[in-house]
Image (cartoon, rainbow, N blue to C red; front, side):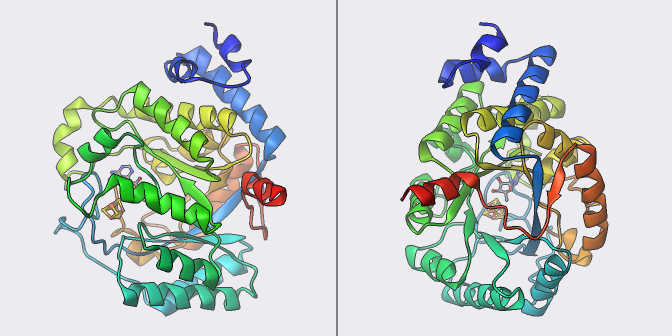
Length: 361
Ligand code: 5AD
Ligand code: SF4
Ligand code: FES
């Protein structure tokens, strides 16, 4: 079927999605353009900033692809002090960022839970209850998620990484700590607690087919997510998955496949928030701008103090590790203007999809 015929359908099925994922140069540009028009119509041309604070690279997990996995001894572990975190938050407030993302390795213990709870409360006070707080702290119990939303957090990012159980276990150790069903359960709890829920997948993993990716998009649609972050797989030499590097498709193809995933998701879920992930920029200097043009509407400038950035390397060639928060802000402003978008300042930039659901209840 010609691409125009697929794009004119009201709902895409798995075979349509696979066709779109296969699209060649001319076709994929039509796909991006179509998704960009949907973005303008349903979420507007405002790009929202989320100041990203990678506050600690200490992690109890051992995901086979990740550079800061517990088993990697070549990493200098760090954990910002509460003061340092709050300084980064102050930077976000001073520069009219509507919201911040608190991201760290996955830890589950009462001390950590309490620490995050009081940090959220302090962030709310610091910003006069104006800041939108997003958490990205992995799998936690119902009680923990509940404490954090009651303290003031609004959104939670927990990537499913792959919605296919077999593939999930190809990229995670097969043990109790890396349980696919628990991850899914956590996403359900987050939804039940009324967080704005974000998930996503890694694109271009060894052993991943277009069918897997089509299923990932359908999973997100069926789960009715509010936000999404997807990025290309970037191999890291200190990880077990590195040995499968010869099975990978070229970097450029992983990049284009991610752009197609963003566009197709924008078409399938018109009013959700979709992030232009940092990993896109590791492959292409203008990777995040291209993602914005293909349908993404969220950018997460790094506001972690510069001296720690080098240690939060989930993958190699991570951009902005030599920069400070000010540099990234200036750089991002220019980039967004080039992509033909405006910056949404002093606004939470909530997922319109989530707000609509709230209004209907
Ligand atoms: N390549 C691409 N993405 C990665 N992540 C972790 N390691 C890698 C890698 N090597 C992503 C995971 C995780 C997010 C914080 O970073 O999807 O959820
Ligand atoms: Fe830890 Fe997240 Fe890396 Fe897995 S992907 S090892 S949970 S930081
Ligand atoms: Fe960090 Fe460009 S976004 S320097």
